[in-house]
Length: 220
DNA sequence: CTCTCGATGTTCT
DNA sequence: GAACATCGAGAGG
Image 1 (tube, protein in one colour):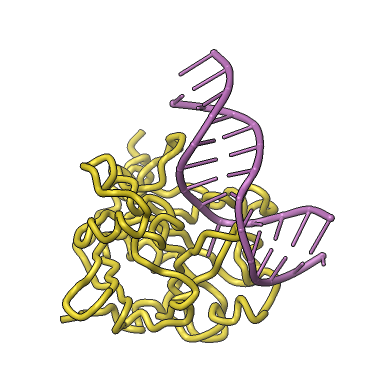
Image 2: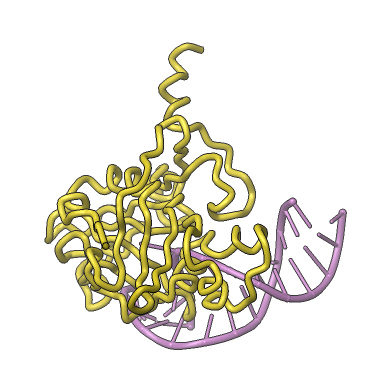
């Protein structure tokens, strides 16, 4: 039985939503009785027309229109001509903001996810690469432009509450792929991820303090 | 391990 | 015409 997060969860400050989405479970119904599930381990905040890395920087256009709509709906778009990205629209209608769902730890439906990714499921190494990146996640969960504007309370796609993750295990870093945005938007640490998860975007380890250690830092 | 590069199509200047 | 919230293959250390 679906237990989707309420609309009010998304109607808040985008940084808070991005942080709290960690540990929540993304669910995709592929047909009656068959669901794909993954625990969200990485997410990024994109906030307002003033954020020069956010698509809304160019204002309201046919493409960015969902960002201006009510919270709790999906904003899906195509980039690099071939990759889809899943976002959850946040904040009250009229304020363009969203959280990019970047990576998930597969829980259910791994075989199906692997098929979506185009290779046979083959052990832990493969499960690590099923949804460790925004485009990979969309492939694994079978998401494309058809899910744009779809309601994140189901019935085909939704997000449920999960076990909460303490600050000591959450880290922040600059957003990935935003190097060409003007300062300070290129370096502002609006990417949140589970610090010790092997299911986040791979690549050079970005030295990060956890949210917890930033607090503990006062003791140094 | 790291780095470079091409794929591919929509949106914006 | 350029840029793009990416990925995977291939070359080199």
